[in-house]
Length: 303
Image (cartoon, rainbow, N blue to C red; front, side):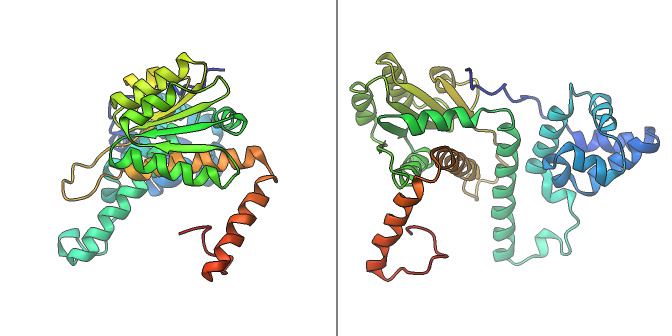
């Protein structure tokens, strides 16, 4: 099965302006729907179509007609651009109680970092709507060996974090962030192995090379990267990174949150695919921490 996601639309569409224009030209049910979407674009971007229709008091076909009237092939594309609008200008869609420039520096920083994180997660959620995560999870849990590759700050962090998530499920997993080790380790894999490559740009040569080498020897490759890049084309299955930077040079890239969402999605899907057997491994990890007096069951398993 081809688990590649369709390429995300490259052109940024000002869907908010289009919706506001429909308020002037629409009628009846369509106006109620547009008003509902503009009142809570976050809900409209992520809620099931049936719930959007119920909240607006319209039929589901009305949503489809609106999407086409706005120039989109269907509701999926409309909702993608709505999530993108939230990511790029979400702060401007809410009336702040105090103008941003009048807030203390600490409040400005907190607001900008938090809004960037929300935006990254929103766009990722929309971009993964049609990705076959279940198929990836099955490959991971059946693998004789799992190698995770990432080079650079964000991607190496994601690779190591995925190792942390998977080993406690009882899986044989190793992360490599060194370019030479990536290539060498890939060359000794067997056909039952799986490699997972992370690269935000999709241009990391060592990760792409390792994926290519691994596939040469029969291993399967899952890549987490930007669509339509060299790494995206090198893997068997693509978990697409969909993000939009806000241009703030003082703020660390919010792409890290998109990477972390990808890590957690793969880890949780794998755990659920394995099923109750993972509970014994997790119990042992929790038990091992008792020697450090970390006994509160509400705390995460491992700091």
